[in-house]
Length: 373
Image (tube, rainbow, N blue to C red; front, top):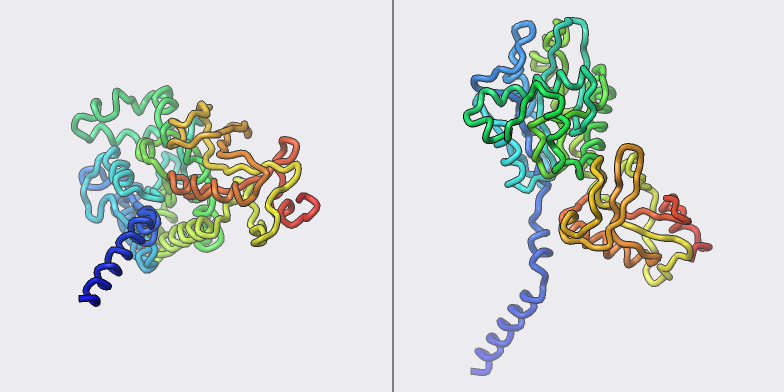
């Protein structure tokens, strides 16, 4: 009888401990980094057909190869908007990513232009810069909506031929623009260094396929099918494999930086920043720590409803962007706690920055200089 009582006590003790353990911590143990791969066009929409090559087929083959490589990593879950030659509406592609609560959305395409000479890769992120060349790209990629039923209802009267429409769309996703730029630059760098391709650089435009994705998102143009030599390369098995591996490596590098809490130079993150020593003073005189959670070209009100319930939000203009910060303290341990809180609220790439006299300074220098304590 006593043994039975002891078993019951142990059972309830474990149940109580389990109740005290935060569910988000238990859930986090099983979380994977979710990447949505979107092969452009498909089905009755062939995309561009420069030199007889079909964009829809090349984009799908590259997307599947990227996914196959990423799936080798047990910490990554890959979701495809399509795995066969079918037509998927643009808004549904974003829905797939949002419902999966994805960490990244990568849409893969091939370029075209009337002149057969241009060649090289481009990676696009959401933006409002409407140069004539950029607008033509946006117009071409967005016109696919006319193949969809009820497109007027799905896109609220959006007109692909109107520059005003391209300026108006996509505000929701802009909080992720800076993270998107990080990934885009990594992709283009890999195209240059590893694939040995010409890069035409990072571009910004209002592209419908990334309009409503609530995560860092890019659209990759692998090259110009209208350029005879480049079109043949992209239509080859070797070319597709090389481009896929370059994209894979960029995604893995991006994920690694997030895992290590190391951002990129454009974010002002210092990879040499060290943690405060356990037991040491964590108050730094004349230093203000903040957590950068987002950047956007939109001037948002610093209200909790704009930032997933987070309070104590501040912002700072940086060129054409506004950077948004959470928290304000001289206690380094406290700012690290706030950083964790921001991540749990949905800002996984948030990071700590340091200010002195209102100017951002090197975080590593602050932490390594005992005179600041």
